[in-house]
Image (cartoon, rainbow, N blue to C red; front, top):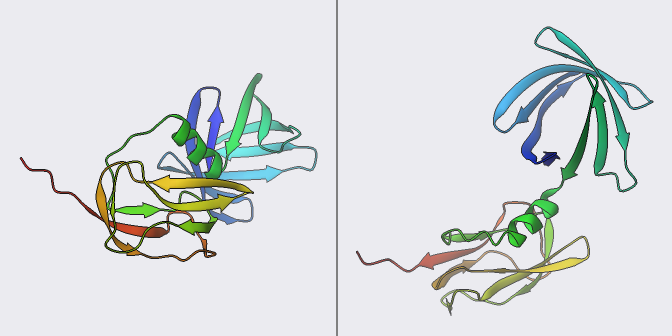
Length: 173
């Protein structure tokens, strides 16, 4: 999941948990911490020989927190995979077309527009997905050909699952 603290965006994943001992991956670096959570939203954190006390105040929507720690207050937003996907779409991220279309989040396949062998042009939709009652089209960013369709309409898929494989056009040098 992504966590936004002010303007900083961090990818955070729980690696393991054994009682109060937690391994957490933040932007590719793993931290071993000991965390005790109390019912009132406060916690005691031990990391690298130092002790920290924090208080988390949850907002109405459950994804925004105010964290008070070491005489400072931090505004934190937790972004799920759908929020991350929508942020990337809004930014108009135009990467080179990959040889496969992957699911950006856990979702349901609503419509498949292509078949193996179809020639498709940049901007053409490949599939429509639905997550949290919102539908989105996944399209290609450059001309290519459909190699294989790996899903059917109505299928439930997981994040990063391959949906369609593509044959990309070779660039002549």
